[in-house]
Image (cartoon, rainbow, N blue to C red; front, top):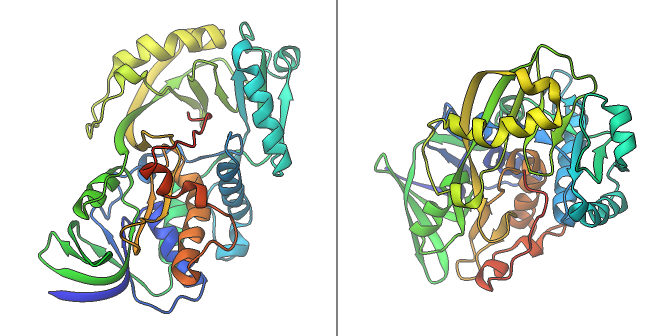
Length: 386
């Protein structure tokens, strides 16, 4: 079977569906086909995400991207109708810094405030006053998100984009080949045997994005990196607890009557992998000792569940790679979010739609996130990666 689409979006989770939604919202009249190989969304990052929202980044673009997502979530009924609900819970992030990290934290907060984020710098005495159950030993200061930081139901947000994507057709299939000629993508080949000729391709395939790029002969420094989330039971209340990030990177936050916790592995323990197996040694080795020290009430915790997901980890600088490839001008990237894809999906969806409709960004200028920095091996690092 051979078909034609003006835009083929590879990947129909949060980012791909946001692109489809904003194309329709922006008045795009072309044919849009979204190809999703896992229509249950059981194995994608969106379906396994903690779905956290925050403003506390070190890069201007990331702050702007996430602030738009927060504004959309707060105004979800205005965007999608009176029945729309994504279960937004606002609880704040506490990003703790060691003495060596204090200067960087202060710079980040100054940038965040200049862009309208509602964050503040807390000294150790104030941290201890607000969170008396938290040990502040070794903490020189912390950033605290007073408003706008929390989490949503990831499936609910994705499904709103998907169900509201006017004119988009969703196809349960897998792209297994990308054809191109004379500097342009000409079509895709599907696992089912069909083909789609296309005017543009958007690579929103998450932790599979490098495979899609390779089908077009392109190198993409995005790798599947496993992240584990541990669900823990603690009988002692921790009043006011938000998403608490230790200087070591270990984090925890409330989730119903439980807490969830985790940490990004050390580089030597962070290989490329597509495995979903749980390594409980990671909790005992890297997570529990920090929790027990930072919040002594957690010393007697019990792990009651765990799951694994995968970041589409940009090994260059942990920032998204967005926009067209310089050699294949109609091959668009929306990849490499390194754990920030769900919260940035609204703004990224709008941005890619702007490129497809207008040929340029019209709201948030994101050219620095383009592929040119990959080609030049010129990283634009994001320092606040959790």
